[in-house]
Image (cartoon, rainbow, N blue to C red):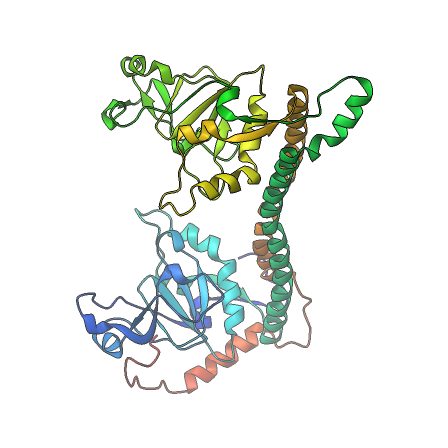
Length: 455
């Protein structure tokens, strides 16, 4: 270990707590489950205190299996797999499965809150110690032998209080940062609503009218009348699972259509022979692709520029706008507006799987301004969305920094740098020696039953 602060002593976790682990009662014994005793699995060590559990076992399970009852105030730590190092304090008397080690803090030597924070700080070290096998695991032996630095009781209390104070501030920051994406989503919808109503380009219309003759009228049109073509994808009889290949022509599926974003991560292909049968479904860059299913929002996007060849699948509608009548990006944005969503949602109200057909979409009416104003609206929408994206990027960076703050605070605490040392504190070496002598002089209590905490 590195040099310890004044008054601290090197020790092991085995010297600070009495350790044990639990077990899983046989699932074939129905009278073992459904009782009143909380039974903790390692995946449930998600909060500071575990007050209740998904499953409960019976006293018969305690007596008939390796499960044990640990007292409230014990500290559990996960030993297996992806959960290694997760820790929590038992808020109630509880049992655990074998994937949890449980430490009962030695009275007068270490407080449960300090042990909890200490184990949190050591999580990375436990993960490192668990590497090497087919599944990363640590054992009670590893935990007991793990070396740590320990201050006296008074400093333990000061450290826990300071950690709690700082982490409360971190939680406040995290809550504020976590709220930003929802605010940005509302902002984008506000922008689209402003474009939909014409208020986004109202100032532009006033300025342009001073310089030239422009049309201020917004014409109400059916979508089909401003498209060169609009088509659905081939249905099951024309495109089957056997037609899919490892490479070839890309197929746009529902999973590729996001809200104003083409989701290209998932790729599906058909071979060229099948493509020739479905050539009429060939998509072009800039086509507006619309999902027939109406979920929490309208899923619509444009096919991005690129050299790949695409066709669309059933329920993925293609709108190929006439550029002399409408700006494809403007139409996409208007379809994505909340105003459009509410109209379409009302039309499919009550359906088990809310969806529309191509005929409905082609007959759907929207108001559109002149091509110049459409282009101006698109420019302004993209600018404002880009501003929102920049904020979102900063939020992601802030989240990374905030997430690292907790570990930084813990690391500083257990280097002895978070609170000042007090020369009047009892040194940890004297505390360890005193408690060890007391425990040696006190005869161990006989185990009465498996209902008692086991170490």
